[in-house]
Image (tube, rainbow, N blue to C red; front, side):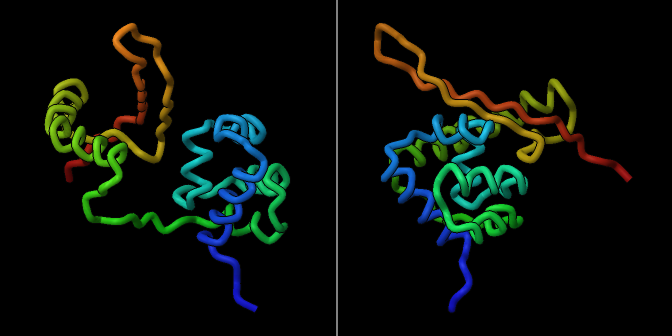
Length: 149
């Protein structure tokens, strides 16, 4: 018998989500986490705290052995080629065009450092606009200054 992988558990979650007709917001609410984090963890990019892994297994009707897989520390590797999916590509484009600007503004305000993607949160909301609804992405990460030694 082969051992269950993070990819297997992700596939089970996606199947259960589709069968149940749930949204990521509904799943996140049921495990008391944010939708952004819940999706990222379900895709294998974050480790569920053990109690949240157990809850996810229960909510999604997954096999019990999936809980330990969900709680494992991930290897954060993703496709390094420029993506062709238009939505994901636009985020690459935004970083390509505005990345140096964001870096300059962060360093002017905080000094030489970065925004953490570890001590971090993000939300996605829909904002009504007469010209067409807008996507609002908000990110908040702890400032981490570089050390000098």
